[in-house]
Length: 241
Image (cartoon, one colour):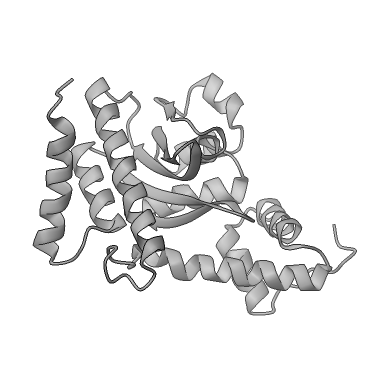
């Protein structure tokens, strides 16, 4: 492995930020990750107290759709990497073993045009605060150098998050802009979860489970169901199943 490679990856990230005229952000990190690792898409999810897996950035609509599958189905490489504090690398989602491991997620991801996913936890000490997901349209594994580069991108994504927490106004910690409407979309999910908690007279964690179960049963995305709740087209009663 090239020992100078981490410096080169960071140089590419910083150069892109300078060209864009803004601080390093998740946007910067993920777009360079797409280029360097020849990815179809890259996304970042954080470890949320209620939801567990909460998307905060997607490099495009395809990456967002993949993250939506994770959270709606409650399974997948990203969820496992976040829960187990270690990378989960999948070279072919169509393999029998992979389909047995994630019986709902794997076939849905393949149908969406994704064959390989590489999920790297964002580790703050021994704790996963999030996960970086790299997806490809074709089956195949990362090379050892690509895997090492992915770890650098995961570190960069973690640094951006830590800086944003330290400077909530974004003055010194990078842009808080999130592309593909991820922040706005998940605000709706949070709002719907609160409404379901009130309607069903339960706590927020149980309300989110009910919301997700309804989305799965109806074969709809979590966001679609959340929007129906917020618009009061859908209501959860205390005794509903």
